[in-house]
Each structure stands twice: as C-alpha cells, then as structure tokens.
Image (cartoon, rainbow, N blue to C red; front, side):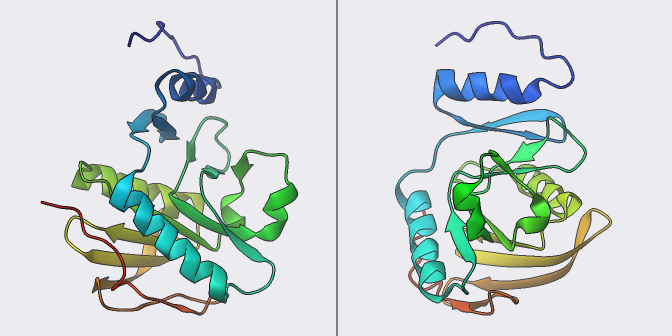
Length: 190
C-alpha cells in the first residue's frame, strides 16, 4: 500500500496521524513530536485488555468507567497525544464531544506490550505518560509475564513503582483501590 506524500507542518501532525490511521488501519500516536505506528491489538493482546476491563468494571467506584480506543492529550502541545490500550476516566466521558481526554482526568492508563515492542519504545511511552501528568500507568508484558504499576508523576518521571509477575495481584491506588487478578492473563507464544 502506498501512502500519499505528506509534509506535516507544526500543528497538523494530528491530521497526518489520522490520515495514516484511516489509510492503513494501524494505530497511530504522536509522542514527543514523532509519529508512532503499531498494529491494532489482536488475540492475546486484546484478550489481556478484555480481562482487565472486566475486572475493573465489576469493582469500579461510581463515577468512573474504563474505555478503550481513547486518546490522551499532552498538555500545551496541539499535536502530541497517546492512545493507551485501556484508560479509566470519569464516566462523563460518555457524553464528551472531544476526542482527546485531559491527562489530569485519567485515573489509570493501561499499556499491554506488543510482541514486537523494544525497550526504548516502552521507556519512551512511560516517560510520555509521566510528563503528561497521568496519575497511574499499568504496563503489562505478556512476553515474559511481568507487570509494573507506575504512580506519582513528578518532573517527567514516575516516583513510585511496584512490579510483579503474572499470578501476583495488582493492588491499584485510590480512588480505584481494588486488586486485579493477573493469573488469568495470557502469555505470548515464544
């Protein structure tokens, strides 16, 4: 498939990302001024998201909801945005006309690492969430059966980190204050 030549100018990277997404079906984000493309989730990746969402929805405090395919804006940058696999927001998002959520409204962002992601991509994305001010980020790695919960964004980095392996429960911070079962999460084939 051939994409049309695009020469983005400042302030329209978002438009370029949307055109690429529409033309290819890939998920496109703008992270730190760079276009980042990834295949849409499938199989075990999507299954991990579904299983987490089910657990969250059963125990979610009133006024919050879990959303897929919801992008988060980088404050003060008209182009930069990220689309986590799952995000917990106030349920008023149901009636919002914006397509970008305010990072300060995000209670939890969830990223499930793809089979092909590299460490630099993962670390860069974690830094993006901290710089945006997202309160908590849960990263699941089905390649090796590990998870990490980052919290307390300060000066572009998270000050808190709790790590575990699949089988260990993930205890989320308030206002979620619930435990997620990781024993049910699938691992990628090697």
